[in-house]
Image 1 (tube, rainbow, N blue to C red):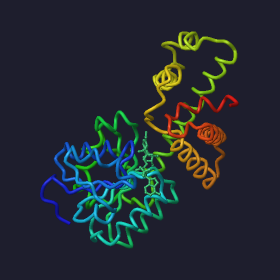
Image 2 (cartoon, rainbow, N blue to C red; image 1 turned 135 degrees about the vertical axis):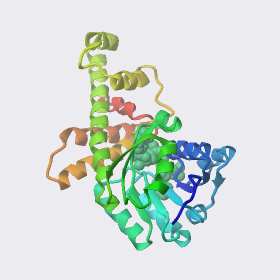
Image 3 (cartoon, helix red, strand yellow; image 1 turned 180 degrees about the horizontal axis):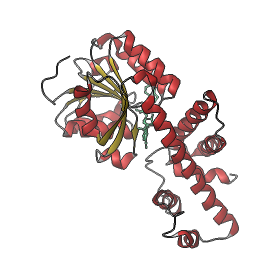
Length: 295
Ligand code: NAP
């Protein structure tokens, strides 16, 4: 494919928390965007930004230079791309930003090979607010050749792209993403447990924050996630409990397959599962706090 200008036709498959914000920033950057979402109502507000709302994945990818997938997990991305297959042209670039497991990336790359798509493993770091501001960190691996086509897409959704390799199938970007999320999930679990212990022991959370203020244990993330719980601002979620459970399980599985035990991630997954069972699945992942308490 030879794209002569930076103005592209981009198809966004999956317009949830992240995908909708990314699609909006693609329209703002001047790209022609067609958007599809399983639940159509979530895609419809993008029409006001100039996006075309497609009825099916195949309809969405017709004439696309770049297809951007931002779905729940690897199996959902594969299923949606199978539905898109009749209209996928050989040579189309696929930027795959769903957080998938290392193994799943291999399966997605195999689909891309079969359909002669240029595959980019391209997960992102950053949550709802950076997504809305076009300030994500894009982690990307894929062939040198089509980077000049895919880079304007990454530039529209992100502040920076970190290239981790030239073979998307090897999943080097996803590996880095899973490492980063293992830290996010550990910090979220620790925040929830510190707050619940404080409550149980009759300790004012503010006295805990004051005790660590300005020292090496203080952390903006702790303050931000604790505030969501303490101020009851768990909806709308930036990163939902159910999605965090999915990621925690991907992390545990990646560790298991590569011979390391990840006990904290496993406990985090269990906390997210319990919080979801209590009815907090759609709330921000900070709601894992509630897993410390019996109903
Ligand atoms: P979300 O709002 O729950 O969006 C998930 C999307 O996947 C929705 O469009 C949903 O469609 C769709 N979906 C789920 N299962 C499907 C299926 N079987 N077939 C078709 N579509 C399906 O989640 P999100 O937070 O935007 O996350 C999207 C991806 O980005 C996930 O992989 C997540 O791990 C990753 N991520 C999230 C964040 C974050 O902070 N939120 C940050 C970085 C990466 P419906 O609307 O019909 O349910």
